[in-house]
Every structure is written in structure tokens, then in C-alpha cells.
Length: 440
Image (cartoon, rainbow, N blue to C red; front, side):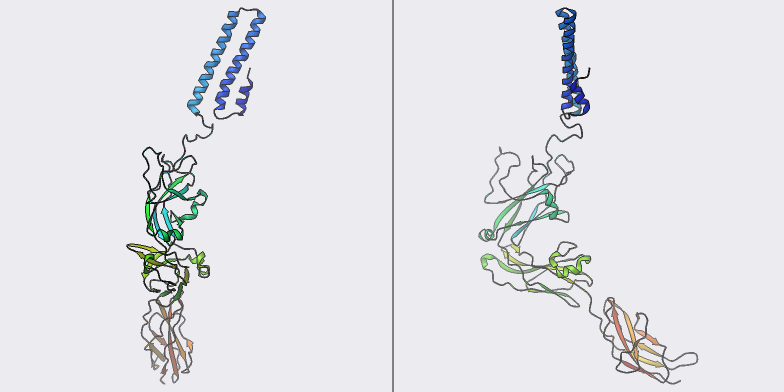
């Protein structure tokens, strides 16, 4: 006879440790039922008490042995976990961050580090970890007693990055997090050492160990540069900006000039970026281009056809320490080549008389243009001195010579030459030269 508990087991109504316990309970329950039936049977048959007791004990011992065997085998095979995939018996803990760095930019400390991708068990992390950022001052730091719990820190929790928003701070495979400081606190505690550590976690139960500690000395931030402008010339992108509106006192640091940062904008977004620089899609983070004490800088390393994103930071010197302001409002400029080559020089024209089998012609020569992006030349002819005339060549001339075979003996012609660059810009035309075709 199959008991009610065994039916529940076979129907899958109980899971985890319960199937094993239910199965043992079923055996016990069956034993009790069997004993009861045996008791009733023996009473009806008026058998002896000794025989009844011996049968009942035998059934109970058999049920107990089977229950113990089932529970032991179940524990060995399945433990106390789900009958599906096995679960970890302890919280997953990421390995500690080991490359934390910090720098002050304006009133912000920029923290940069690499997120862990494995646990302390050397297993890959399936979930994105959250981040806890701790900040302390050297004056407030106290030694941790030996008896204190492992990984205990006296640092103050400054901020957290939930796992859902961590990707917002990823740049080039690393996390870059801005810790905004209080300007009044910076002014009152100029030269204070801030000590940063970070921890990560994927489980509420346990956080990672502290990262490497990084020490950054903070100072009052310089004023932000205003009115940054960019102007395109043929040889340079010229940047200029406004000077400081007020002088800094000696206690606020010594003015040390400006740093110019540059990067390129995604060509697909270049046009929109010119009108809305703050929304520009950058190919790479801005890099230091130059440092100057003037309020103007000529970028001669640009290339036509590229779109550039510029920002400028003011610099203050505090002893050996250098502090940058926050970025200026950016400016974006597309370096479009709108500058034509110079007009060709030294144009000469010589009329050639027709001979037997050879028609009359005009031989033209001129000096080579020196522009590095020169693409070729065009030749123009007119019968009037003041007119540009008609272009004679169907394709750009790659050399500074041309022979005009479509002339009529006895007539005079006026010639001009123009130079074209690779962007399609054509120079002003050269001075006109006259060529008279001799009669045969």
C-alpha cells in the first residue's frame, strides 16, 4: 500500500531537503500502518503477545534502517541545496581593486580604477558589482586594532555606485568617478591630504577587501576659463580666451598659466557637435596638447578634414603641487580647407608657326606651385585682354606646361593659369600673357 506522503513525493509537491525527509517519513508511516494492521490481525486470530511484539519491532527496525539509508544517501548526493543547480555555500566576494588612482581637477577628485572580474575563489563574476567609495583625512585616520574584525576601516563612506549605473562611469575599460568636494571645505583646509579606498560587492552578505589606498592633497580650485573661442586659419587653429577676472592671493596659489586639451569628434556627429559642443561624441578622451602662460594658442598640428574638440584649464601652483581648474566650456571646430593655392607665377607663351604637316600652336610654361596639397593646374584662353576666357584642359594638368593646338594663324590670344588643391579650391588666375600666332 502506497502512503499519502509517498504520493506527495512522487507528485513533486515537496522540494529541497523535503523529498528525502518525506520519503523517510513515508517509510515510518507505512511501518505504523503495517503494525496497526498486524496488531488487528493478531488480535482477531488471538495470537500470543510475544508474536505480536516481535512482528511490530521487526517492521519498525526495517523502516528505520531504510529511512536512515535514504537520508544518508540524499545528504551525500544533494546536500541541503535545491534539486536543480548547486548553490554556493558562502557569499561571492570580488577580488580587491589594486590600481586605484586619484587626481584633483577643479573642485573634484577624479578616481580611476579597474573593476574586478573574478571572485576570491578565482571564479568569473556573473553580475556587475556595485562600488563603495571611502574617503578619509590623514589627521582623522587611526590605527585599526589587531583584534578588530578583518577588513574593518576607519574611513568614511563618501559615495556608492549602484551596479545598475556603474557602466555610466566606464571610460576605456576603466571606471572614472568624480568625487565632488565642498568649495568652502577646500578653502578652509587647503593642503589637506585625502585618503581614498574603494570596495566592491555582488552580495549583501560580504564586501570585498579594501583597494590600495591613494593619497591626494587638495587645494582651492582655480577659476574656470571663460569665453573659449577657436578660429581657423590656413596654417593653424587659433584658440583664445578671457583672462582671470580677479587676481589670486598668495595663499590661494600662484598663477602658472593654462593647459590646452584636445581630442577629435566622431565624423558622423561633427556637424551637430559644432552647434552643441557639450553633446559631442568624442573618439577618445581629451589629451594634453600644450601649456602656455598666454591667453592664446596656435595649434599648428591640426589636419584639414578633421573636427576638433578643445577645452582649457587654468593652473595654480601650491609649492611643488599643481592644481587645475575644471574644464572650460568646450569649443568644437571642423578644419575645412577653404584656402586656395597661390596664383601661378612666371607664365610665358610662345607662338609656333605652322610647318609642313604640323599646325600652328602656342607653348605655355610657368613656375611650379609649392603647396603640399597641390592637385594640378587649369589653363584659360581669351581673345580679349580683360576676360578670363575658356578653360582649355578637360583634366587637371600635373605639370606646369601646356601646348594649345587649337589656334588660328594671324590671331592673338590671351592666356591665364590657375592652380587647384586636393580640396577643390582654385587659386586666383595668373597675370595674362599674350601670344600672336605668326602667318605661315
